[in-house]
Amino acid sequence: MPENEGGEAAPTNTAPPADQGQQAPPAEKQPAPEDWHKRYEDAVANSRKWEDRAKANKTAAEELAELKKQGMTDLEKAAAEARAEGAAEARKQFGARLVDAEVRAAAAGRDKDVIDGLLDGLDRSKFLTDEGEPDTKAIAKWVERVAPKQATPPLDLGQGARAGTEAAPDMNDRIRQRLRT
Image (cartoon, rainbow, N blue to C red; front, side):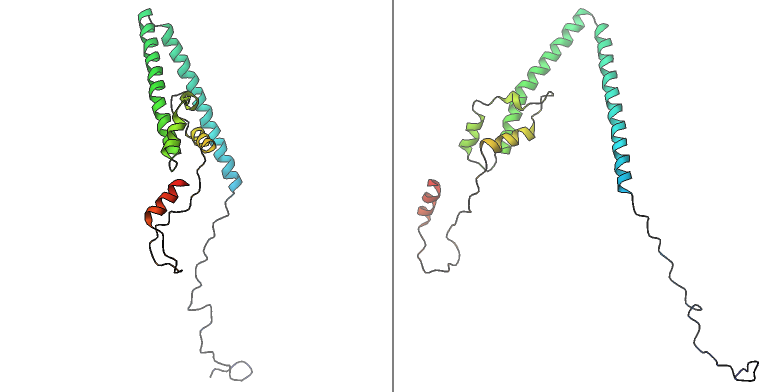
């Protein structure tokens, strides 16, 4: 044993020190918490920037169309007006069909007679946007208000094991009973 200055034997440590031989695991860097409010504000600012650009582009397109219109001959103006009238008529005609289809889709699960009754006398122009497309949200609200969906229990077909000893009614009687309600 090695001796220390006082002539005493110095204790020997056979175990390696904790910081020698073993490396501490690398400290994982925790990402800084995100500032969601700042991200929201950035997204809103970006959205407003693009909205302003879209408005400017729309204004520029309208000005360009006006300049083109001023430079047209009478024949070109008449042709453009006829095209616009034709497009409006097509939107009106096919828009009505699209409204019918949307009403049928919104009224799915309801009686067919109810759907046909909804379509009779319906002013389809109320459900068309300026572009001639059906307003699906307005149609869905209207259908739900006029013909709300009825919650019906599932039809019991009398199949499977029964808990009671009661004789099951005839299937035809069940169908007739269901049709009466």
